[in-house]
Image (tube, rainbow over all chains, first blue to last red; front, side):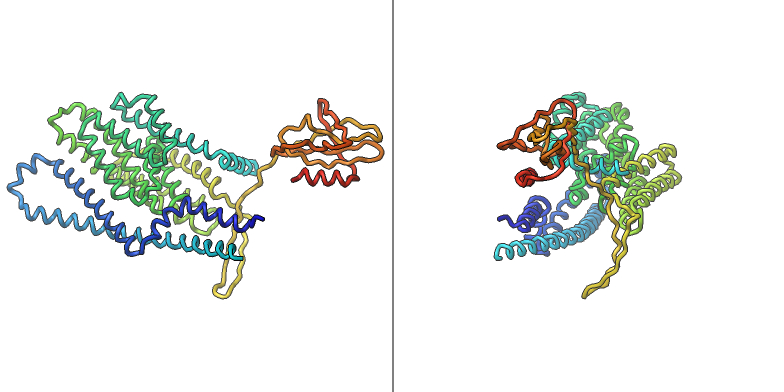
Length: 128
Length: 394
């Protein structure tokens, strides 16, 4: 005999596992601090690449003047300015990533909590 | 209104049955539109400006995940820019890379918005996207809409400077680079548009989430007004040469398009709102319930009216076989000792296979001649017939 309640529950859970659940389970496998650390590191890497690309474009924008004046400009001052802008970019982008990943982790955990409650319900149906 | 609701339910039914076919067709049409528009606007690489290539790539996009439409749109744009000049392609690549690394990592689900926003801007209906994303998205959608605006203005800058770039020689690489970067960074119209669209998305989202009646309609009208107002302010401040007539026309088209989205997504009947209060152990609840406007999609019911009459004592169980079309027939058949026996034969939409009803011992089927046949049953005398009816239903 088919237990309708069990079939409905299992169908909902299977559908969740196929779609939204995949991403949430991938997030839920980590501890909060580990997940956020990994994501912030990735963001810092992306911000570094983006900054390098923008810096290259900035150099090429006025390449001839830059090459002519390279011996006149204060290279240490120029480098410290560049590092300051890099630091600000990385900190701002890292902070934004931290916020976004915290919210994502909280949402994923909440969704997984519902899923695990359904698993318990299913287990109790089996044990009846 | 009922007809529209029935149409909506029928469309939903058709989509749910044929989703496996409809989705690839929609993706094919979308990618075809996007790639054709890019070829039409840029078109500097003649090898790529070929219907066969567009059709093949669109066919590929119909079977691949939705993100590939964005990917191929980006590739096509870069290849056209490369055909114009290497520096143009470099600037294009840098812009796409920055958008992906900094923004699209977090809004990858809305990659299609980055493609649709420039397409709608090119079709002169730019206001639809921010209002639509405010209605169906989240405040984070303003990032993807902003990226779409950047892509649009990148393409516009390339188109506007194409003739100048073509006239420059290979030794003027720095000058070409400077021309494009100034065209992008110094573009005040782009900044005003991004700000207007971002604020529109957020305002529309906040208003449509309110519990007041007709919040979606108020949100879309407010969104359109804010957009037009901000663009007018930007036009005054930065002299961006905005056309007021096109802005107003665009606003009307936006409201119409968003009304269609509202009809399919969030159709409520505010006249039947219920407000209730109740409590449990922990909280006291004030609940406002607004029912959705729904109507059951009608199932086709065919009644066959048989005008033929029977003689007394004859088995008058109707056959209904010859004229049974798609359908599960449900009959109430009866035999009376005298007079004509009549049964109503109703055919419903689901097909039923198996032995025709009434094929049993002692049954003499009746052929259905042309025309309509009714058989309206008087009484159910025969218990077996009743059980046949029961069997019929299952």
